[in-house]
Image 1 (tube, rainbow, N blue to C red):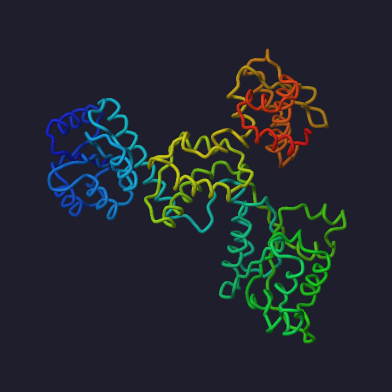
Image 2 (cartoon, rainbow, N blue to C red):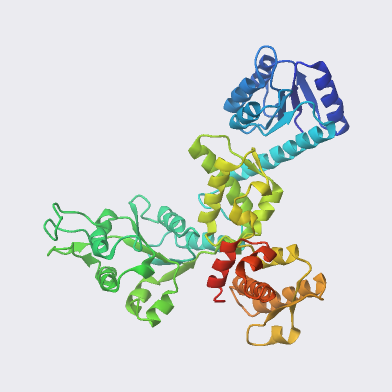
Length: 498
């Protein structure tokens, strides 16, 4: 392991830290001023450089904050702990703004100081491994089996021009998959043009897709090329295709059928050399049954269907994605990337992420701005995560051991969904084994929505029981459950418990 560098003009501080760290089998190297450190850093290679840097804030020949700034310019990933006997707010704010790992006021408790240094070492080592993985990461991240299936599908489709339908919840990354399909296709040198059909008013969507001739309607002062023409020789991505107006579906079907279209107000057919990739979060089969989506267009689009998993189906990818988004947000904002602790990652992996990957990206952006220290702890997570809103069923049940889940064996074996009931007398082993048996039953039966099924049933029963206990008073029920008032109202609506 690389040494811990200690910078302090006070010999007694250096001596105490050196001896304490030696007892912890942590190698050290000491300096008396900032200039010595910068010379040593310039001469050091990757092997003999510091693992972390512990620096005093006030020293002759240069302050610790100046040293922090210089170190971060050359070694942005190096954790720096700032020590000072002047425990004022300005010093703390300056240290954090400069990218310090932590702020340690003097006089400090030696065991706590060593604990902080060891935590910084562990985070540094973990980040080194994470950075190595990130350096080798592809444009799409995911180690979960469900994502590996998506990657394999993209590989199989790499030399094809076939129409693809991408399905998945909002925020799961459908456009990213579409871009990957384009990038690895024979049309990679052509344009990639995306349009969200749900975000454009019906009156403008036709012109957006197919363009218009001059004078075709009021305000059409010049001829305009539509997205089909803009995507010539490349790929057109039609996002949220399920929201396309019915009359426009007919025009789209004609383009997909014979490869020709007309601009609005035009009389000359235009040949379209475009690969179409569509995406939706809706159940198009149900939309067809309801008469809201053309069946012939559905079959024309649904040549190859690629299902993108929700983030709650690939929880093992959350640590990698979180670190990636923290790095990305820091780069966009021009600040030092924050690190995230194992405890905070564990909390994130118990959150259901109704907004999927997009929500995780937004949370990481929020943390980059709002987290007070360089190391993100569970208490730093935003309210919707910290309060438990949207959490999975199992962690919530474990947080309240006084009540336990119990699944009747006869019900688990029945064809109809079994009922989850609360039994105050049942011990932890009974509901955990029952939940395991129920999950196994559904998995063996070939279900692909086990998480949703069990989570909804658990949350429904828990909320109804709390409302029964409070005689329907929602605010009181929310307080007893440990969730917010808005959360319980939203859950009641989502679960149909009105």
